[in-house]
Amino acid sequence: MATTGERFERAVSIMARLRGPGGCPWDREQTFDTIKPYTLEETYEVLEAIDARDWDELPGELGDLLLQVLFYSEMAAEEKRFSIDDVLDRLSNKLIDRHPHVFGDVKADTPGDVLRNWHALKAEEKKKREMESGEKGKEQDHRESVLAGVSSAVPALMEAYKISSRVANVGFDWPNIEGLFDKLSEETEELRQNLEEYPAPGPRPESAAGVAGARGAKISPDLRSRLEDEVGDLLFVLVNIARYLALDPESALRKTNRKFRRRFQYLEDRLREQGRKPSGASLDEMESLWQESKRQEKA
Image (cartoon, rainbow, N blue to C red):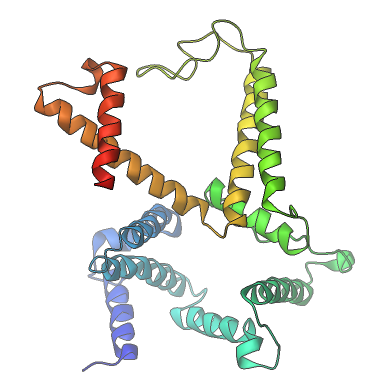
């Protein structure tokens, strides 16, 4: 039976063959930029399999995600930038260096201690790289931002979670969850105050075929910007509530999305049995079927 190492080397060699002379025309024409969308797609498919607890599907999805690493590494090797060996070495060294409480004599008794050590070590590593490459120059004494390394390219919920976690690690946090609920009320009230300027007949739901606000009065760019700010503030507070409860807001929202899909599809199925569609049903009828779907879930 092949070892784990032999299996990994086989996957690397297959990727090299696909990119090599006589390989796959599609694989050979790909670049770092063209592969990026697939990396994001595969990541979400891994998350979907985990959320569904689909243990039969998850190995395949993880393999697809690993393929992305092999793809990038093979393209980099062709350009003589780095290889899969460099990726593996960097990973192993990083795991050892950032776990001194396991591989060294540093003490870390709680997950919080580990996280604080992790961020401190990351900052030290970046500072060392910058000094070695001369990037700092006259700014060697500049203090590293707590938020350094939090990418703005990740989904907004994740970015908000990472930002708030970083600042919480240095003590910039609500002392208790009641403070967060107070903040939620404050932000809700600020949104309501801005809505007082909304022209009659006031906000209306987005129409099926139009753009937001099409069924209501047209609002000024300034008011729209302020409303966007206030909604963003509300979302940020909700992300912090999730963080305070040690919950992943992205996973929580995905769970709610799946629940909504399931209940609405139940509603559609019941209407379809009557030869009808949601567009031909009244709101009261749809609400009744919605409540029925909720009762079915609890039965």
